[in-house]
Image (cartoon, rainbow, N blue to C red; front, side, top):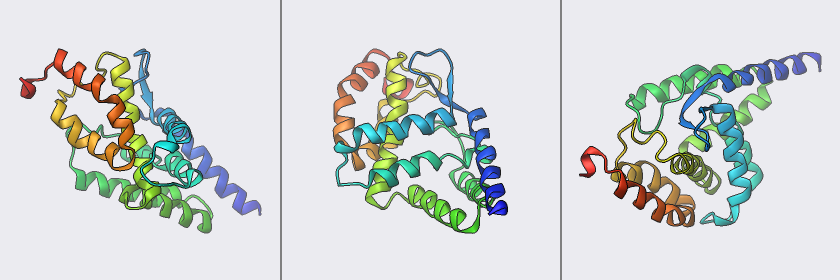
Length: 198
């Protein structure tokens, strides 16, 4: 038991480092960038509150577990904003390596279970993972809308880019959420055309 607890506490202490990984998205009040620990908590709350809007029935406990761990790999691999420039294959390799190390801190049974849950989220093929991906994508949109576009001008995000990279994933698991935000998104891009929107 002592060895198991040491492994569990080592993992939990390592997870604290997620609070130091800054994301591209700001807080809704625009005061600063959020960190990945805050993001993970916030989207778990999104899932809890918005589960009724999932396209298909989901196991909300599994969804929340997925969302609490989905970004732990950023401790090693960093955050790559969806609208930023990065090599997806290299990022996937770095994240898999990070998953090996971070989940490997746990006792073998927990390491196996949490790694499988992380892989399920990444693959986004199950109903739980599809909905989890939807809320993961919608939360930064709300932050950007609440802050007058937030990071969209910085990343030169176009309406088409937002729809293909974000909207498609939100619609896949919770189309009502995207539909609800569409008028605000359309209004923002109409008032703030980006270079390739003109």
